[in-house]
Image (cartoon, rainbow, N blue to C red; front, side, top):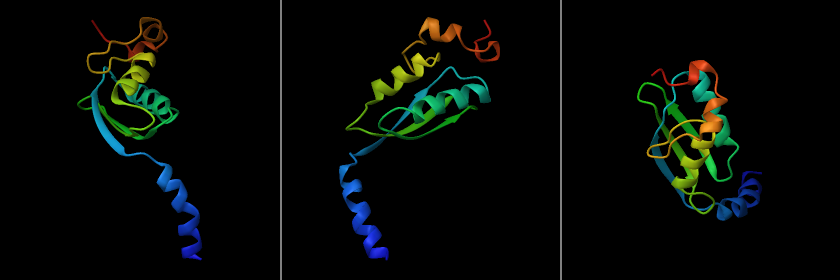
Length: 105
C-alpha cells in the first residue's frame, strides 16, 4: 500500500519547483495583522507556508521559486496594507485596516 501511495504522489512532487525561503521585515503590529498577512500569503500561488514573528515583525516565507519570487511576496504584503522591507503599503489597502493595525505616529 505504501508503494502505491508513493508512486501516486511522486508525479506531483516532480512538478513542484525549487523551494526557497525569504525573510521580510513588515509593519505588522498585532495578532490581527499576523492573521491577515499569513492568510493572504496562504492564498497566493506558489507560497508553501509563512510565519510572522510579531516580536521582530519579520515574516519567514517558504515558496516555490518557479511560481513566485520575493518581489511578488513583498507585493502581496503591501497590497494587504503593510510595509514589506522597502516596499511601502498600498495607501488604499492600509486605509482599510482596523485602527489597531495602523502605525501610531
